[in-house]
Image (tube, rainbow, N blue to C red; front, top):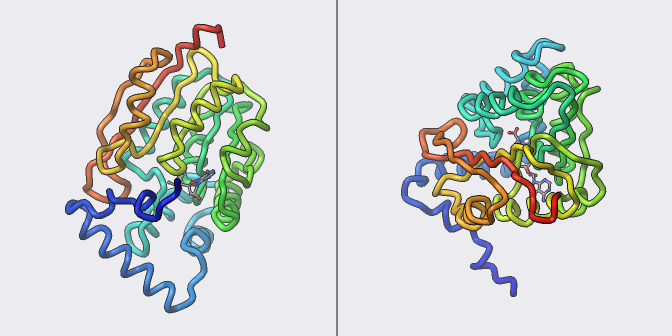
Length: 250
Ligand SMILES: C[S@@+](CC[C@H](N)C(=O)[O-])C[C@H]1O[C@@H](n2cnc3c(N)ncnc32)[C@H](O)[C@@H]1O
């Protein structure tokens, strides 16, 4: 049964996160009092002002600058992003990538930078404002033709997708990772060899349910890479799991 204390993100009260949280709460309150537009739209406007159209690297740099100088952004960021690029480099030319959680489009741009055409990305984003920011940033980077951005919840969109995908980037709400990965398996949207990259699997995110699944269900070869929470010195990790397939042959 749903209970407000059950869904409260207790991990954010961890002492190591106090300074990080205090700054974010302060910024949140200032923005609320000012009636500011959603943060991803302000980051989009900042990128439009400071990046060069068609130059993806300059768009990422503008978003990094916004995240460090203005307001924190939950994009994959410049430390974990290259890990994602390293995985993209392992999949074949013309590969198809699925991302759950687009936010400002930062990781989508990084994926397109490393994925040669005709490779394509499908990105699912539940928030209309975030999807708008992502769409504009992706277009600014010159990748509008390479990304299919679907606005909706992962659980509703996954059953409508055509697969299979060669790489899946899980970066939406952390409590949905296991449920949505199972949904991807059930709909045969992943195949043996598909790489599943899951961001924010460090202890501060309480990732036990997901990690137990990919490490013990017998269908994945899984390893963790240590990193830091984007734009911070707080510990985090990325879990990289390669799908072996199921006993039923999916
Ligand atoms: C951490 S951010 C994604 C960051 C992005 N991948 C990047 O690195 O640039 C998480 C995003 O997931 C979206 N989200 C949360 N739950 C979702 C769901 N069930 N389906 C689709 N998107 C979801 C949020 O609105 C948010 O924009």
